[in-house]
Length: 271
Image 1 (tube, one colour):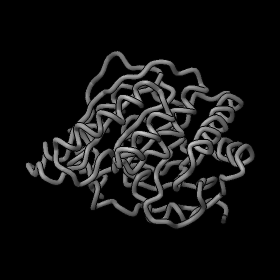
Image 2 (cartoon, one colour):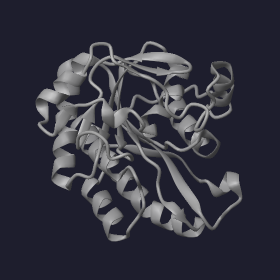
Image 3 (cartoon, helix red, strand yellow):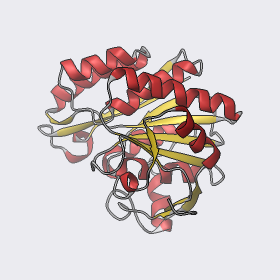
Image 4 (cartoon, one colour):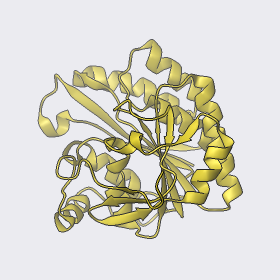
């Protein structure tokens, strides 16, 4: 990987406004003025177009105290790159800000987990980390990031990865929050989505990574980020999390009016 690699926006102008002034106004519609914010170990946040999922993402980011670094785990929608691809150095550009990669923390994760590879290609066209960043930039311009995309992994490897990330965080001495980027059910009726998503959400709220992994598989829940969320639960527990809050749940039908083909979105805190 070349030094100071620059990752440019891929879905600006599609998932969110590409003009910085308009983007800031767009985010302001979705965030809330929370006086009592929570110190969290991790969150779950959706990654659809802001018109659909922005209110859920905005709600959860509004509720948390910001760290030194966000480690953002996402599904790999493109199939490019390694099984676990760590964007380990350089700059990540969005219309509101240029994010510095926390290279020390990224390198520590790479050393601890053999499946993790330093990889740029997996991030080129992947939207599910990028859409988190304008919300983060709105609240903080000093935070650093470690973007990690993950393909399908066995449960055992999800748990091992989560614990390795947690140990890297502990050794760093930094305040770090892990973000699991995930939407919930895809393209089912609103009723089906809410029923299935509730099953998955309850396992997340119980901090039960095996329960989540199994229910998504057994019930064929089309939750694209089940692997990042499973990994994040293991990480959060290793960091001492024992409480959770469902900040907000919504489906796309609330905006589109189409209750036959919806996508579900959940914002969750682990602390």
